[in-house]
Length: 418
Image 1: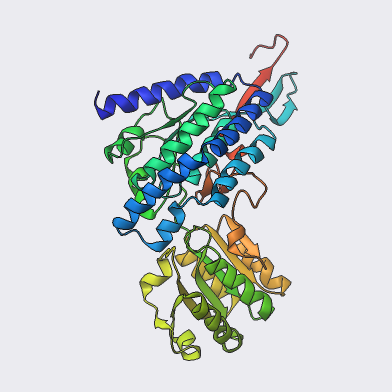
Image 2: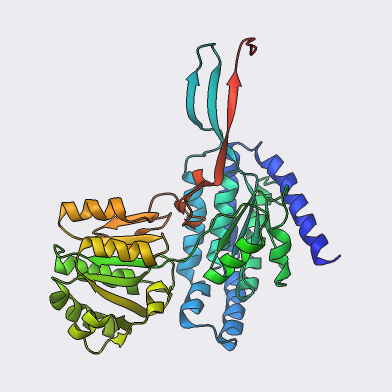
């Protein structure tokens, strides 16, 4: 068979599985998720071995340190995958939940009910832990899922999917509820995203190039997890110790992820006080700072920022810095150069906080907290499917509810329309 036929079979199987999934009880789904978690644990050595091969190949191919970090599966990350599946099992099942109910004057009862989307295709890069997170969430929401990971993680992804399917099958998971496109042929993505009538939604997770390519090719609705050009704004009324800790955490706690800070904005009234102390912390952490002219007068050793720096998602130990005259200027910068992902203000001024929260057009806005909290797990959603920077259907961290749609149930006792 050729690639087109292979993808068609995968999609047909997913459609069939989606029809079986809607019949599963919550108790059944939870037992299957627990079995998936247990199987990952029992196959830990095989997953590590596959991941080591992926890491070796990626190092030889010249992947950056940040990308290698995203690829690596430590014991802690495998534990987190297992815990994520168990956490999802513990979450309330959205399928069948009543969103709203009302009765019309003619006696008709209208119910708005959550239902699965159907077949979800997830196209992603580097992070093999996404495999378990995505599969677990889609399954709990009674969706069949088709996974297409990056070639750099092909061995890791295959081992994880094999574990999920083996564990799930022991407890009665429908066949083909979770499938992995194992071909590394780049044309596989183009085939998959054109399967209208079979695939109901495509979610790309990765760099801007991947997301643009998927969006341009797709005939299926795309929910975009776009760039994370995240900002932290240090206001004139910020507590300096708090500001230093939050900004440092946002940048260096894990720089290769989408909710890491990429641009620091500092009010001119506190630039002289804040920036030298912060620069010392960044130097210790190995961060290269690229500043505008004003910030470079305060910290001369900063590199000169270019226009491109304001729109770059580094995913690495590089940080753009700009001094601004007001909270309004900070908001204008964020809305002009940001990606509508996550942005934070550090301030004790309630009026400044309210203005920032109201005016910043992003899916998540933090007040006196690190941007690194923009995460489904940190929000209490269990594992997340991604962070949507779109405005339609879902926005921000996507959990179970965002993997459902709804339908109307109209109940009558013989009414006819005149």
